[in-house]
Image (cartoon, rainbow, N blue to C red):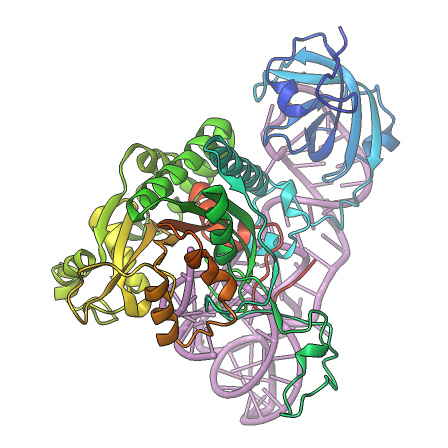
Length: 489
RNA sequence: UCCUCCUUAGCUCAGUUGGUUAGAGCACAUCACUGUUAAUGAUGGGGUCCUCCGUUCAAGUCGGAGAGGGGGAGCCA
């Protein structure tokens, strides 16, 4: 019996498929990269379809020494052989090789990856090769699965995928420092009569930047399609050196007309649970691998630093329980009444009006509720101009219909709000925050012509992947991380 | 940007109160063995102790500056 490939565009069988019940006796073509070569007979071959390797048996005496010498870690092979029951213990089937073709050699002395555990820091410096490890194999298969699930979730619910621009001229949102986009020469850029750089001579005839958010453009789409989402790269030139910030990251931003803050929260919670469920269902092997990896890592930690939860256990807990929903005011009360506060263990002051610090968010999520928490109704003074002012606030304690979702281990994973749909209120807020109304005229048109209550949020895709994979450093969940002072590849 | 820790072989790390020729495991090479599971055994090669300046008879070890990296904080997703 010969394997007939109906799904692929070549004749080979992928290892994942081979391992999931290909009958013994089938003749197959397998291609992949050598993970290890044991005993001069057993090749562990991997093609990235799964962490499991297929064991290729090269029977002693059947192959030239000159070929065997070239079967080194990292080399690529084409194997033609027969699926047979394995006599060894580590696998149920293996492929008995009839022919071994070396597609690409890998100098054993120079190939940096060894069949052993490497540190994540080392692999980060070898980011172009780290996909060939089990850990990064699992992480990036999960990243793919989650990206796919994002589209499936919104598509199933009738959202339109809107591609908002990467290059923008709007810097109104103030979401952070921006990367300037220009074709003007750095040296001797043209100046106007005020001595400033003359951007009218620049490529776009004005000053432009890389986007920090697609939200404002997303709102334009929502005012026609009712529900849209964006999913694309976002750029922030902040000098942030942390395990949860990137200069280039991917964000998902749904925007929904006719939705209020409650609807927004319901959607966000359902979305996060959908993504986790999708990963649990479709990438069980990868989750289990990362779960085991994390458990191993936890063993190295002192008892008080251990999370006490396995990865799978944590994910199932999130999926099977409602997120806690509290107002900002309630959050402040909880913090003020905590023993943690009474023992003066918070470094930053706690009082109504402050922006919640990491330590406060972590206390709420990890100590108090021990599950994801949605905080709503933040003070207007610390939030963006487009967020809807809550009605009936005590003077001096104005709040907006904002919501942040805080997740254990990574903090803020979602930030969103109901938008201010009332033109007069919005303009008043923009003036107070010194945002030039003329430049934002296109945005204000949404409020001038058929404005509706609407809401939306942004979910940091890498933070979501961190949560699902348990990876603690955000640089390990994006293929080629861009961070301050670091832009390799 | 701030605080803090780290930098010794390709990798992971040890290196005593400053002392003579800087070690181990893995990787690599050679040989042996052959149903292995990060194969095993033997032998061997492999070092700008991050860089510079200083203290000292003597610096991997002590001091200063710089570079790179980790963790935490701020900013946020």
